View 1 (tube, helix red, strand yellow):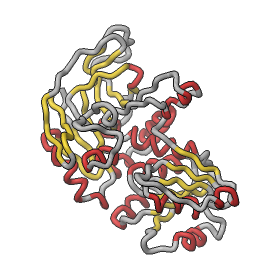
View 2 (tube, one colour; view 1 turned 135 degrees about the vertical axis):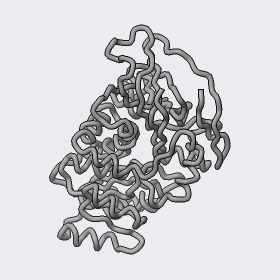
View 3 (spheres, helix red, strand yellow; view 1 turned 90 degrees about the vertical axis):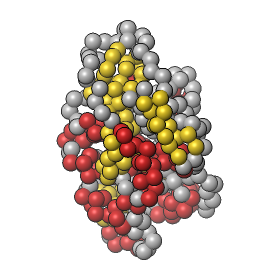
View 4 (cartoon, helix red, strand yellow; view 1 turned 60 degrees about the vertical axis):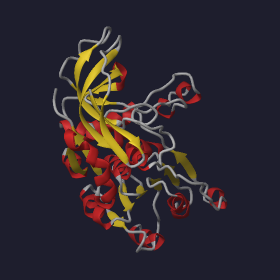
Length: 341
């Protein structure tokens, strides 16, 4: 079975890996599309501390059922399209006991702590699959990354009365934009890459600001009649944007961190208290978030087409990381299109 492996920093190659039949409760999925995530690019660049090489990347997966093991219901029929939920949950840690399985202490995400979906076939537990025949095949692989942004919006308790500022217009930021839009909120985005601004506006953003050229405090004041925003979602993962989220937050505002800063962050902690901020972390996504994204893409399918910036055939997939590295400022989603069985 063919797979794409990141074998060392800055290099990927095709390798043959063993295949196996599904056991009880398992399903064999023919992988049809895999979206590359920022975490995959960080793995390729040697910046993902959660990954040990070599690793088959890919956790944004859409495919079709190729076979099912014993005890799998007949509804999981051969040929049915599926969205993959790439996380695991132990069922016994503090998060799992509270029902927040997306934040399982011992989670092992596909493509990160275990080999992922960039291969011809993958065997998965039946409960890690969501059947869906409504979405375009390539859009099935968009559900997971958008669901991460939807989850951040849910953590921020966003409503139609809110104005939301999203720091970062990458794919997770796009998920937050669409999640806030789905709840009827007004959305502003701070994004340094001018090349992304037009598509962000097409996605329904009210205003896109470039923090390298604008005074965000002044611009936000103008756009909100001096009231400021209600919720700030940090989707960049840099110390300066972590700090900016607190600076830009209004009194009694909500800050949601979905980005992952790779170095320590220093704060003026007095603003936590003076503003009485709600500061929230956001990790992965729940099945409810996945279902919300599926419904959104079903109603607004053109969004999926807008955010797929580049598609590579399976034979050319080993070029994808180099392409993304060279074109990061104008790339939302790189998609790998694998052949049908």
